[in-house]
Image (cartoon, rainbow, N blue to C red; front, side, top):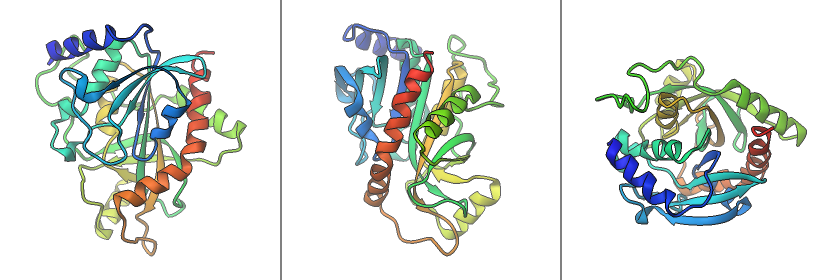
Length: 271
């Protein structure tokens, strides 16, 4: 695996001129942030050695290198999911590549279902913690060059980055919530009983990504900020039939606010 990672890093490094400081993963319906980037290079996933390929609507499938608010960034316009049939090592492969490309921070976004009864569709939730209900991506032989066998997760989401994000949101009068994200395999949306179960576990929102990426980021000591857009509700009395297209549409409506937060946050981490 390490050989494949190094091969991929070498391929990408030869195509870019500047090392990115921040890596950004754009979730379902949130790819419009790419329009805010002063783009220096686009690399489609299908051209990158060993890289998986996005198969889900709303995930464009390319790496974007450039400047966001004057800061060198790399954005993943589309991520990979366990439900697509990829192994956990494949799902998290790009995180390891981005780290070796030089990023010092990872920003992650997703669309999720709210199980907190105080949430509404369109809410922005800064993730404070997660409950991983998928296979752990660190199962198997440990890559000691990347990180330790046993990884501390007592602060999965960086408190300093979270504090800066709150400051940015308040500055722009953008309402936000905070909460715990539960990660499940999908691709089915939850039954009412499953929503209740997930809420009972202590989660505020549920989705099909993010936690494995964050675990691997921590394995490599990479600070993480993550945000969910509440695209549907798993609250008793508010549960309705939902489709992926509706999730994308709901996330897209909130995208301008989220773009504003991320845009300013990349600048905050450099000051």
